[in-house]
Image (tube, rainbow, N blue to C red; front, side, top):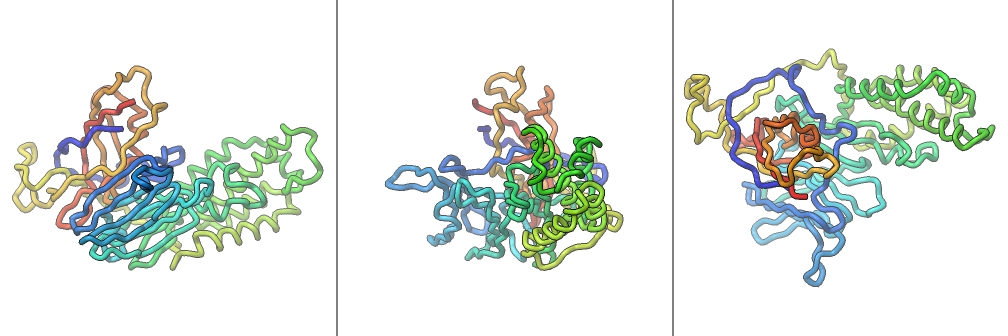
Length: 419
């Protein structure tokens, strides 16, 4: 738990995307907290359009059940997003995702044993309407990745397509292939190829875990690992771990739009007699997964992605001029906000608390919060606390606004966690 937000830290800023230290919303290992899990946790807030958003436990006979619900209300009317689910969460609220309206996006997991979530995007205008549903990911996280307002990406994985791939349960994979989506002129576009550096980082990490001996042993197998039967359980486990890492490497190339590199890697590491079968299976999984739900696919390469400047807003319009940087009234207004971010979800795992942290100690943390309400960088003011910075990468806010539009801003928060 945390204390309520304080007033914001102020100063005008412009930063180059190339120089920003970003916390990727889809980073591996990030704590994936949801608002309501099996009836525990709640959130409710009214948006300035007059639509209220609420997520919380289902009430039966006046008592909270071990289930969650999500709903939208306005003018004594109610739209049930999910009347009963194992998990209900808000990914973004008040964001402009390119659908012609500011939106709220829910994540809904229907059953506890289901590894997948539905991503449902609703307008926040009255009456709210369901604009799009995306299925097949195990978790969704929208972010204004470039901090320039050019478009919000939805980061997820093609978990549904890889669950039971080659009879392997999803839990055995380190991760399912990343998919990055964005709405462009209200069409859902797969823009994963714009972020090849993300995939390259995953590939480098996987390759560092494979030895020449492991690759050689696997290439001598049948690929299916059915025969000949390995001499020990340890040998089988090692072959299986190698197989999974190879599939993940090939998947990274394939999902980032580099088909030829994918097949070259497969040919170099997979048993030759089985490579054709696996290639066909990968192509089928890719085409039937999240790719089947998009309206278009971007084929940009990183060299064609123009580096832009990000405008980071930090001052409310009711506040005076910053004496440290004299500006004209027009310039001053250009960097002022109508509202600061509002908390949706702030949690921290106890295991991330440093050993020397005092119980219920108040800490100040300065964050760059993007136009989707996601934390892109953070630093603790005072005693360094890496655990708090890591926790902040999973926090969610209603973004700051300027002239009716969500924008990125710098925000200082005083937090106090209770254990």
